[in-house]
Length: 98
Image (cartoon, rainbow, N blue to C red; front, side, top):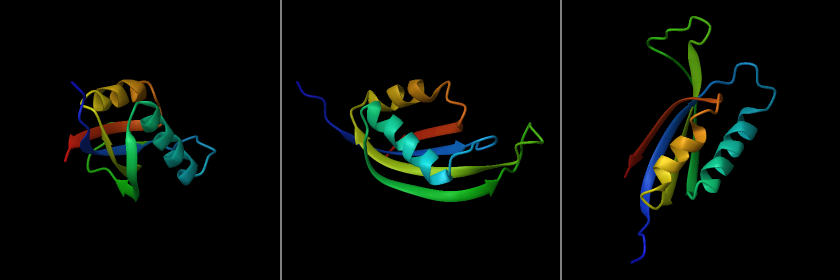
């Protein structure tokens, strides 16, 4: 029995405080992380900097929103979340099946 691929959409909020790299370099690095977890990334969209409605940290009131569309097996979303669990660049993660 072979595993079938599904399509997913992931939205991440990037915390770029204290980062020297450009936003595009950070987004490409995150794309490589997704690929190493087994995702085949088909589209990347930088949604730009957006202010948070509520924030517990007065020094972190906005973040860079990035959306990735990818395909992979049912195990890929969990592998991505585990890979990014300790990544300080990604402050919020949401992956949904489309």
